[in-house]
Length: 398
Image 1 (cartoon, rainbow, N blue to C red):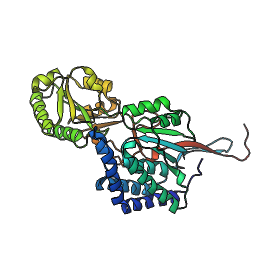
Image 2: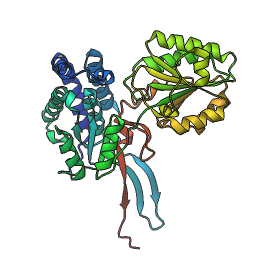
Image 3: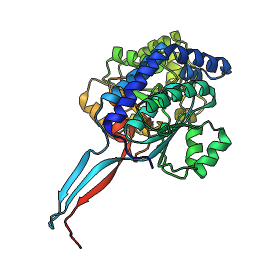
Image 4: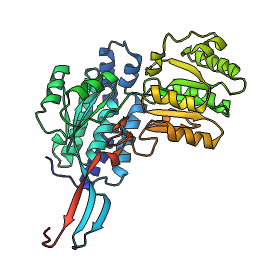
């Protein structure tokens, strides 16, 4: 196990990494173009996640700069108690040790997740996808340069260039100690990791996010929030997939028609339940299984409900436990909805696209957990720690 580095040393490495990303910006973009040229292009969402352009590099730099400026998540006192016999007992945050991150196609994760794990005192094993290999190797070489220039061993950040068979073998019988695994990607990757892992796994689950338009909704807000949630970025887990309209909404049919027209103008494929299909002449869904699906595409399903309770029950049945939003001007109804929806992040009159560590002020995220242990929602710096008890005595025996 690596000895915990001082916070000054960790911050110095992060600050240097930000400088190196700026310095090597053009080289990184050029190498990424090779990855893009090698990619067969069969998955639009994957291709968007793979691209490294100036905006992505800016994001990478910002994330390590933000991390360097945040306080140390390790050694924070969570609880203190003095025993009757005079012993002082405290519970403090502690690093996990070694964290393995398995992800697909996103070179920015090599920076962001690597930085969060390192800042929280952990060694990181990065297992990226083959489609982003050249970009990832370039970024890892920058990590190694930042570490070496600060007199820190380069094995704090290690890249595992493994195929599926090698990855499975490593998960089942790790050749080095691994304390926590975080898979970031589709359901197949998550299932594969959970099936084969021999240590705890934090599940960064699917999206399949819902938005409910209550009878007291402001329809301009509803329209803007739906268009943003569905079309601003289709390749992310916080994108919107399902809309439920309360049939007690006055003139709901005319709003449904406006919404369908607007979505189609963005080339979104729109499907509906029977009531929506009858009101708007869009195709009807084939069966209810589609309500479980996360699309990661220009596709949306619109349905109707008769009450707030029905909306809550439907969302809890089908959503991925990620994000859900209610559009209403009634704050009491909004609060009741938010308290009863079983998801990591619940919204009132806002887009689900904000479920993100950076947007929540965490300075980026390692993943967005749909598990309830040990942390739910965006996992930031302060969540990537375990805890440890410190007991100070003077010879006490029990």
